[in-house]
Length: 102
Image 1 (tube, helix red, strand yellow):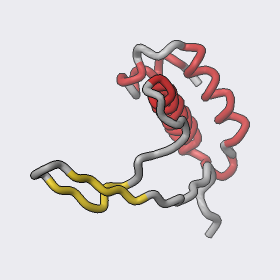
Image 2 (cartoon, rainbow, N blue to C red; image 1 turned 180 degrees about the vertical axis):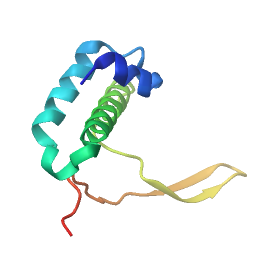
Image 3 (cartoon, rainbow, N blue to C red; image 1 turned 135 degrees about the horizontal axis):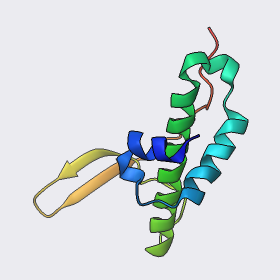
């Protein structure tokens, strides 16, 4: 993956080190099938890279704040403004790097 092109396509990652982008791109190249993604391979690789950079950044922020890396607060299922209240729902939805076969 061309790192300059990645940063052009995703300017929100301009400040991330090239080594971080390259690391996740290299992982994606091993996991994402060119045969299955065909003409969308480059986009799939870029999105995989961006996704994993965001997850790693979220984990680092959670760790720095004393939280538990790798967890999510979940979807907000209830809220209240007066006296502030919030309820969230944690579900494991699962995901796959490869699209489902027809």
